[in-house]
Image (cartoon, rainbow, N blue to C red):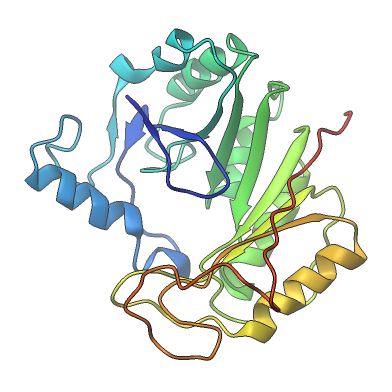
Length: 247
């Protein structure tokens, strides 16, 4: 099953896997877990066990049915490189991606070390964008070095939810950075100076920068009823997108 996405930087979501487990600070208020429980209550197929990890092979062929070039976010409701997902199943997901070169596929993981191990000896399809989550210094920043090891045409960072000043970032061989605050009733605040520090490093290192949202808190440090609180950083929107790079 693929669905039109409300995520600002993609078009469709494709979830041949659902469910996950928490491994770092960015997982604390996982939006996918909340959504899975809601879908379970609604009786939606695939979510009978809520947020428990589940492979859904009947969804593997979905992108093959779409001829129009589309940007897919792979596993918005899971993590392709979760330790309980067999390499053979990841192989099947990548085979579908390779068979549909008209599409682009964004794969985001918090399990960067496993991703790097998986791609040793395997080729990354040209239409794959590989990314890692960078929510803080302790858990997130170290993932960047693992990502850099993988020869993908586009490598990106999802600095969301941005939970602290992540400090100096080495953006060598990184092509795109997304920044956003946390949403939901228990959202943790994001300070403007944290987001601006990332933006300035992108500018200095010639990396495309995309500011997604403020989340549950506004730029003034106040909670808002509206979930996303706008997309302005320093009075403007930042919608830069990456360009494909030769390997």
